[in-house]
Image 1 (cartoon, rainbow, N blue to C red):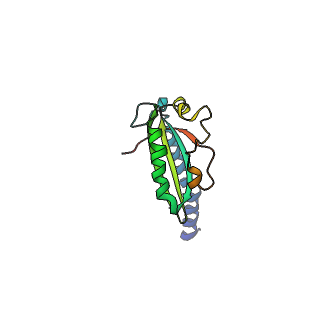
Image 2 (image 1 turned 90 degrees about the vertical axis):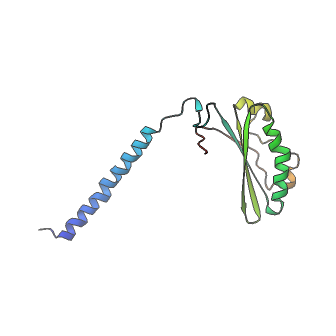
Image 3 (image 1 turned 90 degrees about the horizontal axis):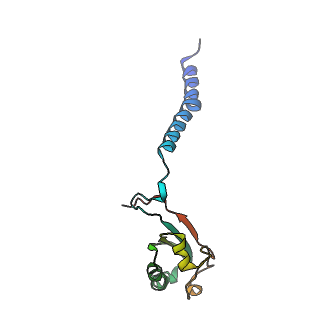
Length: 152
């Protein structure tokens, strides 16, 4: 006859090795089945296609405030005035002696970005004084289709 503690040990291993993975798989499958693609790249709070252009740069923390002011005046205001631009976000993160900036600009289409950036939309279009501020300036930007924008 099997001892109760041995039986419980076998039962517990069965639960851990078979039942828990099945339960997790079932949840993942349910989530995947309920996550339908968003037609026409619509975001929840928007009814039109949106492309996000993301640029990143790092500056010495000692110059971060000055660079931010310059970035807004020389870059953000210009970007926001271009037809097809849907707005911008500037993110800032300080890590010791370095401060990172990420600029996300939103566009109606890649064609609208081309009007601002030229045919090679992946190429950074630096601001005139970026070399005074930026550490190892990046040479490319990334573009993403916004498939959901559920900010409150």
